[in-house]
Every structure is written in structure tokens, then in C-alpha cells.
Length: 103
Image (tube, rainbow, N blue to C red; front, side):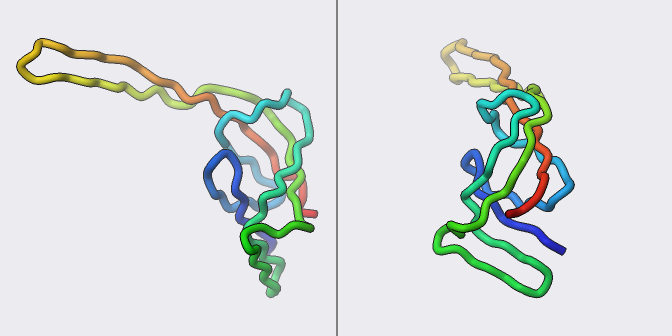
């Protein structure tokens, strides 16, 4: 089984070829091919490669499928005894990518 750990969008995720993942917004159009080059770890069957901090010669090809909004969360702030209450919502912009292969 081939998989890799990639640092993308400020978070580290485990990716496998042929699967799709939801990440923080990536400024690319749907249908574009992007390269994820901050590969921290690679497992190829029984061989393991660990970067210090990254593996320079390895990158991951991915296709942007679509952009969408995540689940809405409610942010509620209150100051006691001041009759002050703030209720706001937030919806994170996300990008769905499909992992083509690990090069």
C-alpha cells in the first residue's frame, strides 16, 4: 500500500492515490492539476522514506474537483453583567481534490 503524509494548507494529512480529500481553500480552478510538493513521509510497500523536513524529489499530482462551503458553526460571545451578546456564524471555504498519483 502506497501512502504519503503531506503538509498542505497548514495541516498534515495522509493521502493515498485514487482517493479524494477536503482541504482548506486552494486558489485554483476546478479541473486544474496541482502539485503538492511538501511531502513529509512516503511509504511504498515495505520501503519508508522520511524527509528532514521534506522529501525534495517527490511530489503528489492532484486534480481540483470543486470548491464548497463547510459546515456552519455558531460563534457566541457574551460579557456577563454588561447586557452584551454577539452571535455570529462562520462557514469555512473548502476545496475537494482527487489524488492522481505519487511521483
